[in-house]
Amino acid sequence: MNEGSGRGPGTPAEWTQGGAFSPPLETELELCQLVNEALGRFGVSGRVSIEGREIRLDLGGRRSRAALPGWLDHWPRLDDTIRKHRATELARQLAQSRSLDSVRSGAQRSPNWTWLVAGLSALVLGGAAYLWLSPRSQASAPPPTAAPVTDAAREREARNARVCEDTRARVLRGATVGTTETDGWVVEIWGMQRGGEALLAAAPALGQFVEDPARAGGSQFIWKDEPELAKVIDSSTRVTVSDDPVSGSAGRPIPALRVTFHGNFVEPYFDPEQRSRFYHIANGLAAALQLTHVGVYARCEAGRTHHLGSWFRGLDDGGATVALLYSLGTYAEPPHLAGAFLHAPGEAALDRSVALENIERASTRADRSLLAGVLGRQSAMITGKRGDGVVITFPFRDGHRASRASRELARLLTLNSD
Image (cartoon, rainbow, N blue to C red; front, side, top):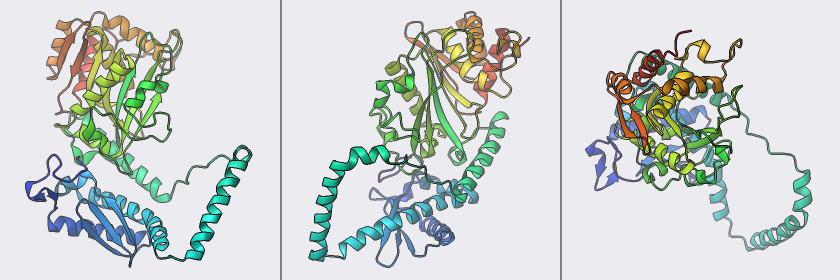
């Protein structure tokens, strides 16, 4: 997933020459052909070429360009459908930047001093008018409207949802999924602060990790302790932060949040050599936000059920068990807890505060010997001790191991029988 020059993890040796990225000719030709076909569907015609880590579109003197994402390193392993989808994304970037490059090139071809003086005068007068009028004009200006969702965007979202559902079905059967199967997925770090009072998404410490945590559409990941992941920047990469307090009838809401990774940020989680990057981030978030419980997993962006659980942390053995059962087990389909433990007596709707209370009460019986037996059957590990934090980690292969462990723990702690 490295975006700089040189080889990314898993890039064949023959793809680099003297330290510069150089994909095989057949890969270059196929990608350019697919991008050309996609541009034709957008009504754009020009010459497409690859130079270094950029793909370029020449429109008779005007040029647009886009960085080649890390997935090109895995091109030989992508199936035809995914190749066409990725090429279409590149074509869209080239088509969208076309008008900007046209404006720039037009400006460079107009060295008319009369127009230049007139332009500077207008700029000065316009700036003065803005300073004079901006308070009143801002008060009366209508709020900005979101860009309309195009048919192509809706079609892409629908396709990604179908692909993710197909992959999810394989995960439920114990499949191991890889970097070619990330379409429609997001990676999520869930964290709870037992005993806290403020909403976590507003915590200043989040500014170490995300450029603008409050931006609804997401922003870039910037944590300096994961510099390689922070370099992954393109139109698809973004991180969203949202509050997800545990609330219901059992007392005051407990602060909790979700940090969700989108786009090409997802690929490292589906790579056995890079998944641990997210454990490092989760550990950093736990320290910065004083989180008592943390879970790392993936889910379909269009869904709410959690899958591919891999890393869970608590202050002690019982706390790590709570993190696993709550962040994975209560978001399963069906939940790993029986109905009587998911809502208050006489109610039918899920009450998360009641579910958490029941899990915490039962997890006091989850000692190290019980956990070792359950986790050992799933080839998982438990490390740490009270005071230092306890972590449960599941292996990469067989993406359903954490869910099976959660279900077995719920049974042994008598949480899944009415």
